[in-house]
Length: 325
Image 1: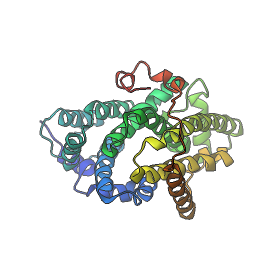
Image 2 (image 1 turned 90 degrees about the vertical axis):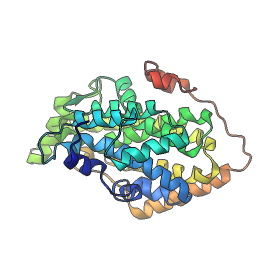
Image 3 (image 1 turned 180 degrees about the vertical axis):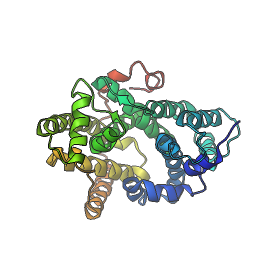
Image 4 (image 1 turned 135 degrees about the vertical axis):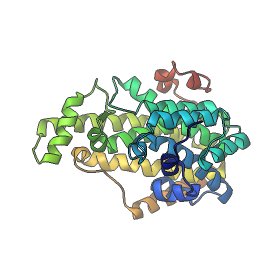
């Protein structure tokens, strides 16, 4: 196998998984503090692997040796998932995690497939394509988390929904940043990619593009409305999570959804800045999520009926089709 140490060190280096979680995943790290230490360590291993895969496209462009490409790096990860020896402790740690928790490696391969679709210019044709993309790059992570957390299989459809919702929030938050790298995730059925890029580039040059900004704001609002449908479904399935982790996962969901709420209050900000939420706000929402989870542990008889229509766009995906609905 032809490894590229310079790039592999950048992407899959020696930083401990919990260090990756602390420095790269602030929202998730804040929520993870309320999880049991053993669970937190395993989730940190999973997060480190998923983050490294996700960063392949961005960091590979910075390779000093000039020989590596994102496709090469992802090929090496896939060979590692198939059992080939791998230079990266992150990949090796993930394989060990997958063995211990019976994580289907098909989920990891689907994640790699989703990241491959990010290489080069990106255009999403329709809402269904957007949902399938979100499944590949985010719901697969949720399904792997379910294995680590030993979640009842009936909770898997709701985990898929939470992944889709959080990824849609990411897309709404990062519209301008993505457009600068010629990646447009808002569906072309909703907005012309050229108009979106014009709005973001016009802001950078100090040239107002009011009509284009309004179009972007409308598409962002539509993305957040779609995300809300999946957040609401995910909330219905929280009771499938073990009590010891329910509050932490709910806190992550509530804090992510709050980013969408902040964008909704000023949707034109999508082309001017990357929206975030305050630390005090995160603390309040985390406390509320913990309290809601305590109340939910009482015998309230929650519903476990999943709206299968939410997964209609996923019918063509082999992995998704195997998930009980």
